[in-house]
Length: 504
Image 1 (cartoon, helix red, strand yellow):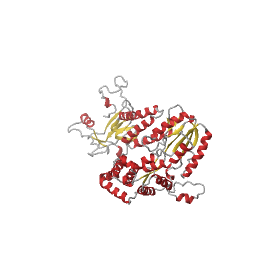
Image 2 (cartoon, rainbow, N blue to C red):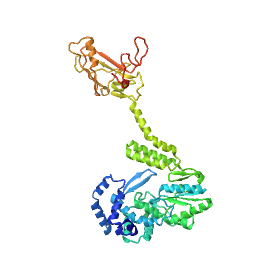
Image 3 (tube, rainbow, N blue to C red):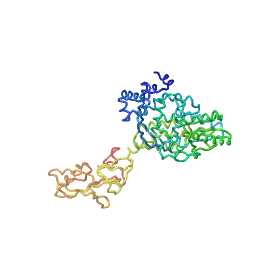
Image 4 (cartoon, helix red, strand yellow):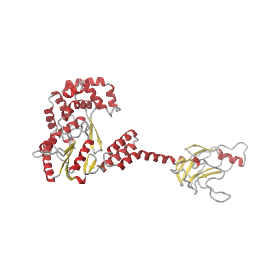
């Protein structure tokens, strides 16, 4: 059976056909192929599809439980994620239902349709803003949680004549119900118990919920465009705009919209439903539209992107970060956002420059101390300075005490006479003993030449048999003994470029 034949024949056998189920599984797998449950199901897809087909035809199919999680974009919502097998059923059902339902939609209904979407909705809004003085902006309060199951089932039954498909829809509707955390809307002549006992709600996250939600508000679209003859009207899901040049006429239409929504057991969100002058700007789908101007991105939309980008950067999720930045760059091209797009392009370069700047800082090697802080006495201490910075607060002193013990512990002293009591913060140096037979200056010269870094456990040295020796190194500016003038480096040593912060 070809896809065209399946669209023309909306029956349970067409929904449960092997071709339709396989196409549905491929679509449900897009973007989720690396999830463990999807990989396991797809690895045995032949057996899973055969078993799913048998259960659909026999009427024994039952939807599984939902997995709930919270999202913050574009606003705080609770998402109900169905199991992968249930998502395959949703796609298989929508493959045949969507063409029949979309033929009933008006031309300016833009949500969840091929060839439409937010881009087409924003372009239509821009044209209408340039033509009219006023706009009635409306939003349905708690749209998906308040969709009534009985009303939706009755309207779907008028269009779909197959009992098997209607029974499948009943099972899908019964698998989810809005809880008491969302109060049911009250209307005239009803009490709270009667309103709360009616089954209502569609899970945000199902493909069927998007299609059925768009179909649920279709009577409102036809009433405004066919009965009231309002051509300057558009809708995206539960947000719709009604343009005009007469304020009184728009207020009268608002009262009619309230009555039409009450027949669907819905109400307007009062803070978001208001009458605006187009010259003040019309917020819609993340942009603010002004007559004769390019739309501007809303501040809340920018802040959501920055929070999202920062979260992905902190998690080091570079793959999703690059995709997100590119998507937001394309999104911002629809409006007057040249500076914002330059920031998107410059952001990877700025991050690279910051990393390079951090790499230019040097690490002080060799039991260094910094700013008279005992916590900085480490075998490698990062001062976060550029290579050309020279400071007399950076250096170290190692004092080796003589004694009879072959493993005498040294004493590390800092300028000012303060000692370092903690061995965990000391640097370990190993000094080789003086050569046999060496005395005087030869023995003393042999000790500093054999000092080598060993670790960070502490300073351990084998002292010479002579008295205590003190070795000192620092980044202080040396003084020429002949002229008495400060020199950048000792005259007998010309350091390499990387030797400026190296302690020897």
